[in-house]
Length: 320
Ligand SMILES: Nc1ncnc2c1ncn2[C@@H]1O[C@H](COP(=O)(O)OP(=O)(O)OP(=O)(O)O)[C@@H](O)[C@H]1O
Ligand SMILES: [Mg+2]
Image 1 (cartoon, rainbow, N blue to C red):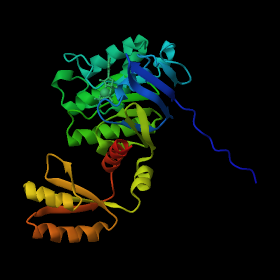
Image 2: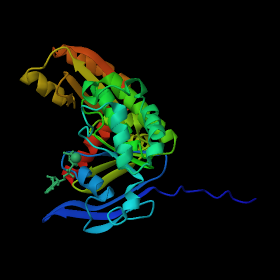
Image 3: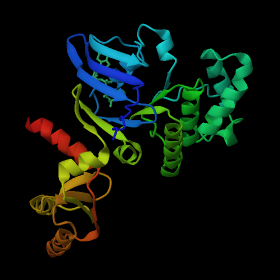
Image 4: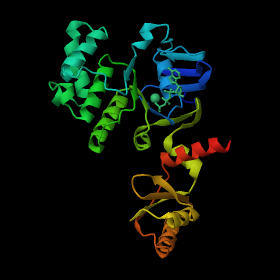
């Protein structure tokens, strides 16, 4: 019997041992990152971790002090053609507000060097892929946040790049519009585009990404498939989420802390802990909290999320 060879797809992007300092402040301390066609990768990390700096080295706008970046095997800082296979949708909407979506795309297509007779087809394709056809003739400044984000992506893909980089695409986007945005990203992945998503939105990363990487202090702390990373870190533990009817007083806060509950978000009265006993633990917790005068509106038991993993990675670092 002959063994079937396992075909490893050729990476579109290879970052190897990249080091960068601003003056004497080290920001990237040896970062590796590989993306293959048709893969969605979410780059996560706290403010100041070095995410934007890494993106700049990938775009060839910043030459690393050490290490290499290769786009389709070529250095984007030296070979302009290497940059052509990359599309960047920046965090700030980078479109002409008074021009329509279609006019913007035509302008971007010309800037990207697309021949005049090929521009209409390129514009049409970008509109379709980003589900903005129905707003093609509306000026950017009259669009909702969600449509502006998608138009921003349309401008980034009009020259048909193999790698699309999205910097914080969900800023200023409501829940419905976010789903539309996610669908656009999946659609691009399905036609073979590699997507590098820089985000603080862990929920979006968990829903979209084939792989995630946690960057912290210029180092990749953890990388892999979200489900596998979560399973490895938490085993059979479940997350117990307690939503309280009201904000607890100081004594209530102490009680919650004694139960191992930590605040999940500041907005809602939401508290969280991990427990191997999941539902049974939630039942017991409910009784004890009520006895202490802390009335839950809802207690949920669910699989640990990327948010739990993010917290764990942050704590590990502090303990080290
Ligand atoms: N041009 C610059 N000159 C000097 N220091 C800089 C410069 N740009 C960024 N830094 C510093 O480098 C570090 C990493 O910045 P970077 O913008 O890459 O982080 P980030 O992960 O993108 O953060 P955020 O989530 O806030 O966007 C920060 O401490 C930042 O202050
Ligand atoms: Mg940044």
